[in-house]
Every structure is written in structure tokens, then in C-alpha cells.
Amino acid sequence: MATGELGGRSAEKLFSLSGLFAVYKPKGPTSAAVLNLLKERLLAEAGVQTKDNKRKRQALKIGHGGTLDSAATGVLGNEKYKYSHRTSMEDASKYTAIGLLGRATDTLDATGKVTEEKPYDQVTKKDLENVLQKFTGDIMQVPPLYSALKKDGERLSTLMKRGEAVEAKPARPVRVYSLSLQQFQPPLFTLDVECGGGFYVRSLVSDIGKELSTCASIQELTRTKHGPFTLEEHALHEDRWTIDEIARSLEHCMSLFPGEQSHKKFKTEPVILRDSIL
Image 1 (spheres, rainbow, N blue to C red):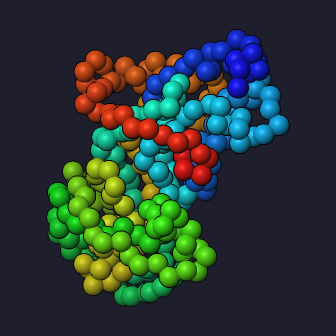
Image 2 (cartoon, rainbow, N blue to C red):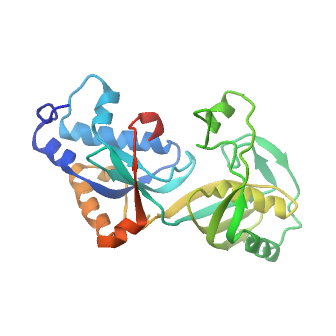
């Protein structure tokens, strides 16, 4: 798409931007849906005109890292890039999770069907704190069946929703930097988690329930930090999704990666821009 078709100075500014920034993801939409809405807002402001909405969105190259579950909220890190390469955040993420003792679901969170209910009255605060020690450091974790992981090119969650039989992925190594109990009001408990990439907080809460001889699932999940981006300081809410705000956010956020330090935190990899995998 030629620059002349993109609509004046606003478009020129938008398409000249490059770097990393973060937005706030609300509960409900997928991470990809949030990204597509962001693109549509920016392209509309820039005056981009085309009959094909998909091609219009693809003209604006923005990718996100660290997919958040539909039911989760919080920081969603993004990159606006001008070429066919992007960078990936490898830093730790922080979450606040509210778990529910005594109830398991097929999705491991509040959106799924209840698959099991067990007594939890025997669980004490001390029991829970002791169990958390087993899930700190380098551990092995089985990813949830409802996830963005793929089998034969399709997401496991898509296969599950179609009613197809799906085998659990084998346990894989993950890292938990810190894990602490913030509140215990049975059946609810609140955790603060800092973890590396590829970690599923839903699986953590489910595994904690099993260790306590009951079951558990997540009720609420918020990512409070993604790489260097924090919920309070860096995540732009929807009312600030404008070209000028993104430009200011890019300038601020990229200052978090000065000089050689940025090369250590990011790796370059090719990207095929398709709405379905953003």
C-alpha cells in the first residue's frame, strides 16, 4: 500500500513509528482481538481507506508478546515495527491470581465447565504457604489443554472447543522467581507470582489444589508486569489509543532498553503477519 493512499501527516507519523509499548487488556477479548482493535483505531485516526479490513490491519505491523487468556486482564506488551522482523520479550512477568479451592474446571479457570468438586475445609493458611515452596524455582509443568499451544497447526483450545480428543502436552521446564500468598479467605486465596516465559498460572493453581488433596481453579488473573512494562506506569487504556499517545509511550518505553542492554533482553525473529497468530 503506497504512502499516498494512507492519508496525510497522521498516517506518515503512524507508519514511521517503531519500538515497544504496552496496552491494557480488559477481561473478555483475546490478546489478538485487542491488538486488532488497536490497529483499527490507529488506522481510522490516520485516515487509511480500504475496503479490505484484513489487508488494512496488515498494513500496520504491530505484534504482541506473551498472550493473555481471554479471562485475564493486565499488561500486554506490543511492538510497532517497520520491517518484517520483530523482537520478543524474554523478561519475567508478574501476576496477581485469585484461586478458588474445592472446584476444578476443564479450562482451569472460571470460564470452564465444573469437572470436580472436593472438600477444602481441612486446608489451612500454613498448609498453603508450605505447598508454595514446592512450586518455586525451576520446576516441571504440564500446560493446560485449553491453551494457545498447537497440534498439527491448530491451537489446542480450538480442538477442545470442537470436541476433539486432545492429549496433554508433556511436562516442560519453567521457572518461578517468586511465589507468595497475599490473602487467604477460604475458599479464596490470592497469590503474587513472578515467572519466566511459557509459564501457566492456571496450571499452577490447579496443581496447588492437587497438592492440598483438594482441587482449585483460577477466579481472576491480572498480569501486573510484562518484561519492563508495569500495569500502573506503562499500560495504555483504550481511551489513550491515539497516534500521539502511542508515540509518547514508545519514547518512554524504549528508554527502558538503553544501548547494549536492549540487545540482551530481546532477540530478533521473522514474523508472518496474519491476524490469526498475532
